[in-house]
Image (cartoon, rainbow, N blue to C red):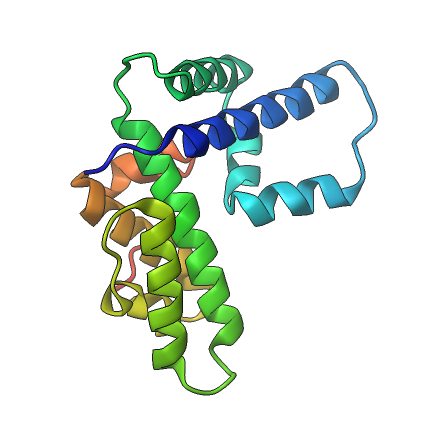
Length: 174
């Protein structure tokens, strides 16, 4: 598995810093920011709001600091960081495909999104890897992305889900 690039690690660190600020502000009684803040955060990092709800302040702090250090080039165990980056990238790809699903030739959309995801991630993502994302109902996108992420990082699916603050997510089949 490829290591996430420094700029991607820095973006993940910024995500956790933002989540930490939101969580700390809430704990301190600061009014919630405008809805657009949450929309933008979830657009860049689909699933981040689940992490905001479910991860502790301590975990958010640890992830922000560790990711920031890794982005600076410190040698750290980065497998989980790469898994996070992969998940968010694949979720963005899946959401783009869901939007395009009703607009004609899905195969051309699959190829375009696979190419974009491959360039973003620095690994080969094929249209066949992404096809399960368009063959499921919208509520089934998360399990499809978890399955693909788990396969690429060679982790059990439940380990990927736990990393993302998702304790129980239905499987694609069944």
